[in-house]
Amino acid sequence: MEAKPRPVVDHSRCEGKRECVAVCPFHVFEVRRIEDGDFARLSWAGRMKSRAHGRRTAYTPGLDQCRVCGLCVTACPERAIRLERRP
Image (tube, rainbow, N blue to C red):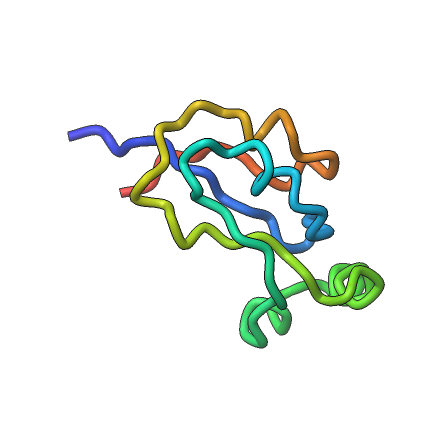
């Protein structure tokens, strides 16, 4: 069985501007403070960028509601969201 594509957020690129939240008709996204574990995995430059933007980033708590419309990908000004097949 082939894996369904799903949105994946690159936390090193995301600036938490909420365009994904605004455009998603299925309520997949939320923007909140980056989790400490995710923050620790960022590069030095990624951590500096995250701090500059208030450590805000997008997460996908409603992932099971995603219909893979791609609106989030086109709306993200940082190109931080991609659709990826994962099992």
